[in-house]
Image (cartoon, rainbow, N blue to C red; front, side, top):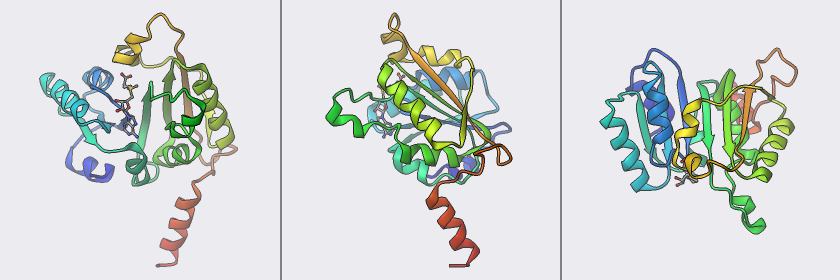
Length: 205
Ligand SMILES: C[S@@+](CC[C@H](N)C(=O)[O-])C[C@H]1O[C@@H](n2cnc3c(N)ncnc32)[C@H](O)[C@@H]1O
């Protein structure tokens, strides 16, 4: 199921936000309960966690939550440009061993897709208890150029997730980035594959 299909099938009057790696759904359910006009889509690769997240949303009567059992890497590639108001990425698997670092979700290729999926002014939220992962994310956001870092307080619901509570007492690093609009310096940055796609569409291929 693509985001476009979900948006079509779930009527909503507000924005569209996506959580990557929603786990058992603690954040998404709490967040959605306070934004009933917003459509919240949670992506999760573990079947059991998807089921728990769906049960949680149903228990709270949240018709604005959709949990998708799919890898985020594939899902974000199919998002129509400029259609998402926010991406939430809280406590992604840190892959602390250096030989595993390349498995981290926050990598330039994924970041490019997230950027293109966001509407100008849309937000990317990230939290980790791993300082080096935070530094990596910040460096990538700056290197990408299509975002500006924002000094925004993280949504309080981000502190209700299992992992957030597990790491209570440790230092948690939050990052908020805002997609620049096209008239801001760097605002025209676009994923090369998206550029190619647009070019092909223009040429009627
Ligand atoms: C460390 S847990 C954090 C869960 C939740 N965000 C929280 O704060 O409690 C990371 C979650 O991301 C999921 N995950 C890992 N890689 C993923 C991917 N490529 N696409 C979607 N979900 C993924 C894992 O199954 C796991 O539930």
